[in-house]
Length: 210
Ligand code: URA
Image (cartoon, rainbow, N blue to C red; front, side, top):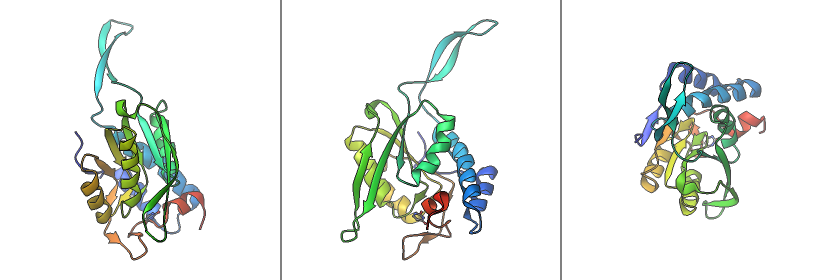
């Protein structure tokens, strides 16, 4: 079982994250770094997957060789910034099933409202990895995980690039069974809900919008 919070301190991850944080990093570099870092984070979030063995023949002999057990993983991207992490992870796990959840924040209630939901079937039998680069308030992540649990998902992990202490506390309160893997826990959220020091709006930085 993964810990509730794993901070990936590997030098490559931390070096790439620093380059991504810099305000003058171009959209192209930001995208490339995100793709690279997502491979390294995917390696961590897929630790301790259930394993089985398969009888195979090498050129020399037979052996019982290790394989990941069970149905294909489900990767769930929280739109739109989740797609940046998703692309890299899919290079490492090309056979994964993929889902998308779109949520926006209602201006009056400030609560997340679902506008898109399409996820793989049989979530109850899959390890489900939810990806969103920024765990800020945790409102949308917690809501997305609730929707997945309502669809049957039982074994869920959450992968982000940066997390705020507020978002981690929110997730721990609502989903203590969901381990979080991140490259950094930053200082706090500002009054606009941005992670500080952070990297700005992850979606804008990866897609070149403002
Ligand atoms: N979403 C972002 O893209 N950036 C933040 O700092 C917080 C939420």
